[in-house]
Image (cartoon, rainbow, N blue to C red; front, side, top):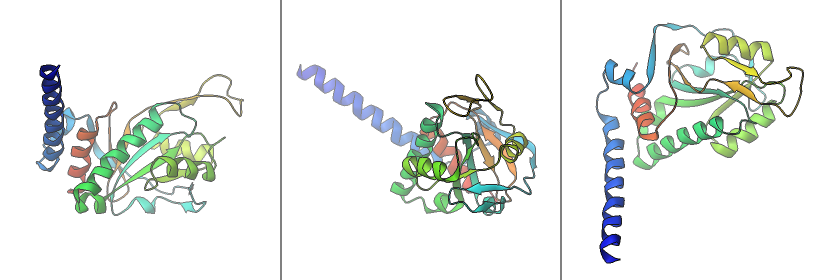
Length: 213
């Protein structure tokens, strides 16, 4: 029993050491090839995002100017999502909580997170605020009229559709892509991060993006 316990302890310490090593690697320079290997797709040219007519979680107009000045990592989902949405938002929160724990002020000051609801039927701004505050109070939640949400989603290559009867107002699921969209400091669509995600790899991507102009 002591022998097994010793090996279990060593195994646990080994996992912790590897996790810390992986986390600390985020400070190393990231090449274009490595970014691609991490699942980052950089568009040949950033796509301008203009004239947005959406609403933020506080009911205020969201015209896209809020995306400027920082790198923004956006996820398109909905508050009734049973799996991928809460999991992804929680993963991003875990990464940013670790940035705070490690005192990574540069990354925190140069990046932000965005949640865009694709379920305008049910996700009024109060619902979005309740949802995002429950998972990650620091994330910016936005919603809006169906046509306006779709216009933004289409412009950043995010597809989605309501499953079942499209006339249903409640009790339905929405199929959607699970990528994280990257917006640059000008508010343009820079690219996206392909799912699935691992926290230590997201940390490497986020901290790298924070260093870019």
